[in-house]
Length: 118
Image (cartoon, rainbow, N blue to C red; front, side, top):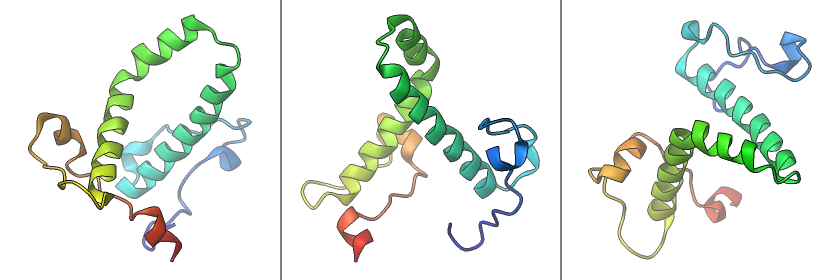
């Protein structure tokens, strides 16, 4: 965890006693960093659940996932595409004023994997 992101106030599945359910109630009093960490933990846990659901190939749940998660998936796609373009050694840097890039404007890209390992 980055310096300054005190994780002592974050309530997660270890603190809640609700068998793996991440408590996101009352987040309005948390710092932005604490809220992001909590959302990330929720999404990581949910992603594991999605992978588990894939084995059942249930189109009804898949349609629900697409319908209910559309805006989140769109944001994720835009941010990750922005990051991919920014970290690419070929081509031009992404512009921030394109309509599709507006949602990713404040997304800070992670360093390329090769830089992260060194």
